[in-house]
Image 1 (spheres, one colour):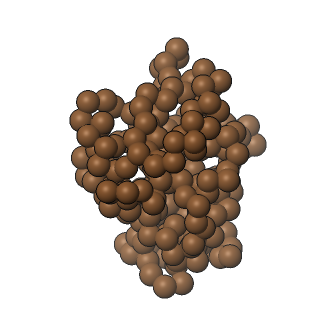
Image 2 (cartoon, rainbow, N blue to C red; image 1 turned 90 degrees about the vertical axis):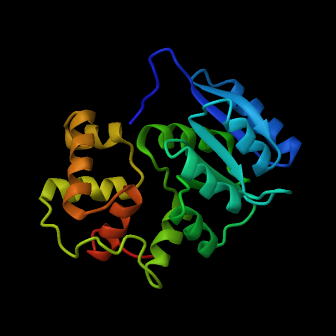
Image 3 (cartoon, rainbow, N blue to C red; image 1 turned 180 degrees about the vertical axis):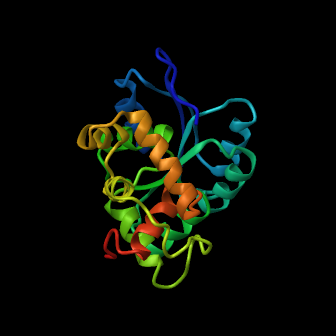
Length: 223
């Protein structure tokens, strides 16, 4: 997975039809030295046109926009730019909508009343670790297990070691790689290696899949 260069920045595009909201996010991110807002769009079609000419690392994507909304735009981003991380921003906190968007490729979901520091943390975490889970996304994903399987090929039992189980639980509790490394007294690189091994053992394709496995096997509780 691509990581930021030592003196580089995480390049971000925001797509939202509310100019004042875009301005607020831009102002908040402008004080962060490792994040750069490189472009803005007010609908999905404009965003897709921008992506033909620039390569962001992370996109902040609104759901409700004119011409082409976020729900229609997300699959197109996933198809043409699979490595770009997409964070959904919305006024709504409907679990079924969040679950649907995470299934079709969102890396995180934030409500628009999220403070700027959490938006910044979501950008960094999605870029470095693929997903940013919060209470909202966790409840939506785990509640979704009651009605459908997101990754149906995950085995019921993968014979995880005690250390693997501990680390998986910490990952599901939204702890960062560094936090896990400090708590278990191993290097961050070893945590990443164990995460990759967990995916292989469980058959999960992503961190979302590991969350599914953890719930199905009682490692973390359903909401």
